[in-house]
Structures are given as C-alpha cells and as structure tokens.
Image (cartoon, rainbow, N blue to C red):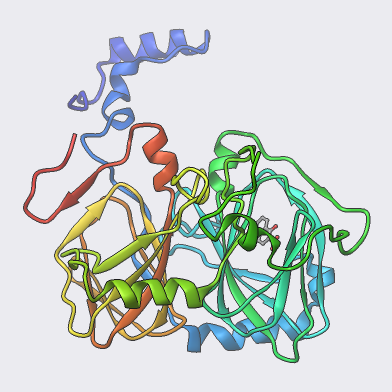
Length: 351
Ligand code: 1HN
C-alpha cells in the first residue's frame, strides 16, 4: 500500500474528468485510508491542578453556573486544539459549582461521567435521584437522562467531566433538550440506586433496560477499601499495578457502553513496564505522586492532576509514593467493534 508517485499528466487529466462526476481514484489515497498502524494526532500532556485551579475559580467570578448552563474549562489536547477533545474520541473538562448555585436540568444523547476532584457536599441529580458527591467518587449520567447539579455545601466543588461527545458527533446522533424547570423532581431517596443495585443484590423481577450501570455513584471510600484489601493477596500487574475496572453489577460488563473507567493502585517505588493500547487514556490522580513517561518526555503528576497517554503510544507509569489513579478511555466502544488491541513491552501485539 505504498503511495504512488506524482501522477502523470495523462492521469491528472483523467482525475479532472472523473471529478466532475464526483468520482475519485482510490489508489491515490489508499495508504492514508488504511494505515499500517494508528498514528495519533493526540499528544501526551499533564494539567497540573495548582496551575489550572486559579483559572477555574476566576471563571466563577466571570459567569454564573446558570448563565453558562455548565461552567466548565475544556481540557484541550495540545495536538487537537479548538476541537473540544482530550483524546480523538473523548471530551473532558473541569466543572466548577459554587455554594448555592444550580446548573439547570437538561438531557442529551451523549453519556457523561463525573470524577470529583475537589470539594464535598455538592450533588448531581440523575433521573429522579440525587447523589451527594465527595472527592474520588465516580458518577454516571447515562444518555438521555435528565440531570442537574447543585451545591448546598459552603465550599466550591470541582469535578472532571468525561463525555463521548466526539463519538456521538461522528455518528451524527446528538440530541439535547432543556427541562422546563431548573431542577427536576426527585422520585427516589438519596442512596436508592446503590442500595438496590450496588450491594450484590438485585430486586426480585428486576429487568435490565439501559446499557449503563444502574449504580450511578461509585463512592471513593468503597473503591479505596477494595484496593487496600486486595493489595495483600493479588499480584501486581507489571504495567498497571493493581487496576480495577468499574462494572455494571447487573451483567459484569463495563459501567458505561462507550467509556471504560478504572481505579488503580501503584505501590511506592512502582516502575511500570512499557505499555500501549489502541485506546488513549485520561488519568486523574487522587493520591500520591509519580510520573508518566512517554518516549523521551516525562510528565510529573500529583494529587488532582489530569494527564493523558495517547493511543498506540508506549508509556510507563511510575510512583514515588503509594498512588491511587482514576482513568477512562473509549475501550468499551473499541472492544464492541472488535478493534481494541494492547501491546505489553516485548510481547508481540495481539491480533
Ligand atoms: C454537560 O451536559 C455537562 O451536564 C458537562 O454537567 C459538560 C460538555 C459537553 C456537552 C454536555 C453536564 C458537558 C456537557
């Protein structure tokens, strides 16, 4: 699939004639359409929270949550500026909600996750249930569910939003609407979803209707405890340390159909083996400090920093202290399409 050299005048003239009929020669573009391997435009990067936080807080003085609808600073991948993408297929941003504010209710076909970075006590209401959020919580907003956020605490709250916006745009399947009131009515008590679906029990007669997990807040204290308990028995993965994936407890599958989410523990002194996979991964450190090494670049990270490892690009993770790191990627979407591949160090690529 080598690119042909500059076309002859005869061929150029032919291309001109067929162009009038909206036709084009495949052989001139084939190599670009079917690359030997992915060559991503996304770049590795770290957003240090201490640098970003003042800008996020300043936005709080410039615009209200109500006026903005969502007061968010978009995390733009340096290789994809102006496209509202943190990876080629995913959107991410940092959302601020100040005490007393409400981000009005709306719904859309894009799926969203929230990962709480700073603060405690703000809530998000999803489909008739409110959940109070704390640092390290992973919260799901399934597609086409009403959702509004509010902050009844006395401190600002910042979380990272992750959405499949570019995927939905590519498929041209985006729909959205506003709820007629600022807040949606609540029909279930706080904690109902976790009690009903997140305890290893299911109500008799329960039928799975949605593709997203019915547990819509995975609290950090439970996730942290699982990692801490398991570290005594489980073997460390040479690339990922001890990495758990968030699952839909109803079927054991991914918690969201398009976005895969993980929490991993990297023990003090961890020096991960090189790893690459076709899914670009967005990380958010909760505890500890370490490094992301990509080629000859090193990105130091600490608590609340967000960093990204591009797709099909070898990287290594290192930790100086026990570190706990959340991450997400489009892996479920790739797997469902039979496209996902990983490559661990010296082993040949799968597939
Ligand atoms: C959205 O609905 C929220 O509901 C946050 O908090 C960020 C980015 C793009 C599109 C919709 C939210 C968003 C978003």
